[in-house]
Length: 246
Image (cartoon, rainbow, N blue to C red):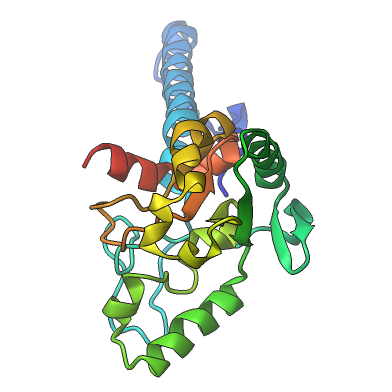
């Protein structure tokens, strides 16, 4: 992830010395040039701080994926999905057997589950962090089993390297009192989903793929992402902007 405070700044040694013919003008000319260069560097630094996270921090440079003939679009999307880096192992914690999340998302989820329980709603965590290797198996194995094209498979599952789950910020939720609706569009008929509609934003969770989303991904009422920290917001900025501007 590119951070604004890592933007490189020019030092005095990087400023070329102007060649002058009259000693009397050396100080004024050099000062003007130095001032002009410093202003340009300062402007570039401000632009990096403001635009860097939006343009760079959400994804790696896109590359072709073996087994998928389609190539990433100009905005980085492959078959509708934005690329994401895999979470660092140091940022992940176990939230229940076999399931990990980024520690920021885990803390917010615990608070949200406690609040839901106080209202008589049982939010169950069905899925959290997935490594890129695991996502590769999920994508291609099911694609092969169902004899799907990559485009068909991408409607319901992201290609490896393009899944929000790899960030550690994305979660799949269910209703423990109505498990028959888990991972189904019918989840939006449950008390759990209605509670999430009313309260999830208070815990910085947003629905990733609402009906008619511009990414072209099938509606997933169970799939939510955490946007409550600067790194999380940077990861999902491109997707958020696309959704807001549809």
